[in-house]
Length: 229
Image (cartoon, rainbow, N blue to C red; front, side, top):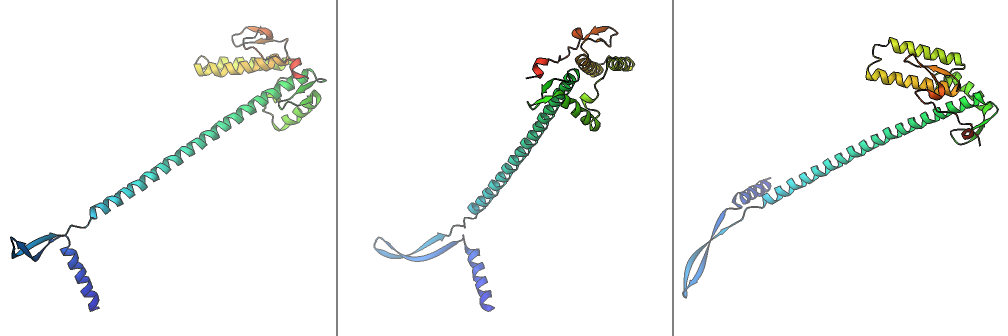
């Protein structure tokens, strides 16, 4: 225990004198004569500043790398999110296109039950099979576009009359959003009505009548040549 105490004391003494001045007596030869000279030696302080600067720089570098990794992770997460949204939009658009094609095919087959069509996947199908499949499909998807099509001219006329009444009763019908909403509904009725019954004359919201070939919202005609191979 005594030896440890002495060692610690010597260590503290060395630290306390480190960086202080020390004096040394030596003999000097001046003009051939020996004289007593005094020399002073200064012990430089420990390079603590350099060590501290190095540690500070290391910490700063580590912080910069951590921030860079965090920014990169955030960018990757944002890109992944955008990719998922783009994928969902693309799938939704494809599903909409398929539903429109299936509706057109069904209308054509309803008018031409003995013919064939080329479906969305590019495969040939008999119209009789399309009609039977649509019947089964509509049992579980009654709100699908092709399942709500009018089955007669009378149903088309009733649908237009109901929509005209709804339009006239809506207080926002003259507002921009109201106009856009009803425009889409009238366009849809006109398209499917005229495709189903090309020789119809359809009532419009302004009270006038328009035969299908000259309807304001031009319908997409069913081209028999494009349906068959």
